[in-house]
Length: 75
Image (cartoon, rainbow, N blue to C red):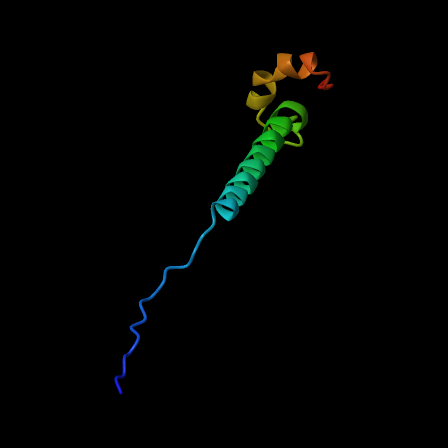
């Protein structure tokens, strides 16, 4: 009677490309949404009194013409 012992080698966890693609897609969509909200804030909301940077009108003046072009009232 012969006995054989099986040698078990550790197996790395399997990561499927589908999960990796989903994570990348979610990260891309989240980054795009954050960038869009920042652009919307700087063009449409930042008005000196509501500014997160204090009462500086630098950003307001920088985006002034674009603000009127897009239909945002500013004065």
